[in-house]
Image 1 (cartoon, rainbow, N blue to C red):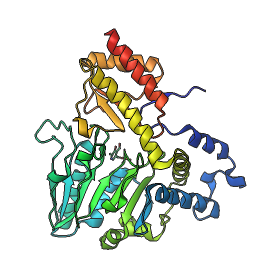
Image 2: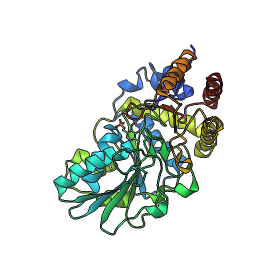
Image 3: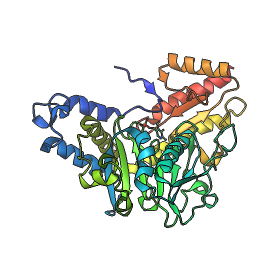
Image 4: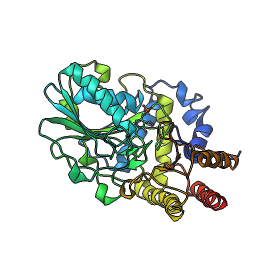
Length: 374
Ligand SMILES: Cc1ncc(COP(=O)(O)O)c(C=O)c1O
């Protein structure tokens, strides 16, 4: 079988060894005569997988004891609503820095919840997206982000998957320092691509289907102090505390999804952990941005240099006709997933952890040849 060169934005390519391991264990998990999917979530076989997935997140990221690792459902989208439901109190403000389409969605849910709770929401549109055009092109410098004592939390999107805008790739775009106000980040499309300091955050969360597994699982890392402060007057299933108190086994978890996360993280550990992964990821992104900048008369990155994403490389060609041809010709050569999100157009190349450097090299060579031939 020939693997397709897959640049999908999510669900995205998974590491081949993680898939092969699932294939090998599919019918008979740990000699039990059953698939892992057929095991009870309360049985010792599944529990070992569940514990290992959580332990791997802790180990890879160096999560301190003062933080819980939760496995949740409903996608990152459910957490857009669940975060204000848990942490927004009456007369407090939820603050959002919006640098792209996902931040807008998170903000939209917070507005609905705040109206229910008699609280308020403040937004800082610091991604050059002010006004009607919503052309998000940058992450703010830390000094541009302001919080106030009455803020319940500050929410950011560490990597905007559609706009290709990411925090912390360049030191000038480091994560904001919010002091006593908890910083909460949607890291769906850039979780575990490199090490970062968890203690700067009250909470980070990520849908698994980009960097760490299949869809259906959300991994959240939350400080215990923030968990304790969470509201108790919302349904139990929506309280993060419930999942922390029950080791994310309050109700039936997506067992097969968690099993796949285990496989992916165990592969990631073998790649030199997050430090090893960062080296490869930066090399992949540098190769593509190198082609874009080296052929500036043909390719154009809409994102300011310091904010360019290492996970989602977005760019334009001189016309939409050429973009369509680019996508069609790439497909003929076995490369898929290059079409930009329908809301912005252009080209988007998603190069998450599981995308090997060789795939990026194949695409880079194709880009150079395509630019030369036009
Ligand atoms: C940054 C970001 N946040 C949230 C989401 C929504 O995730 P889900 O569809 O799993 O709810 C996505 C999905 O692409 C995303 O890229």
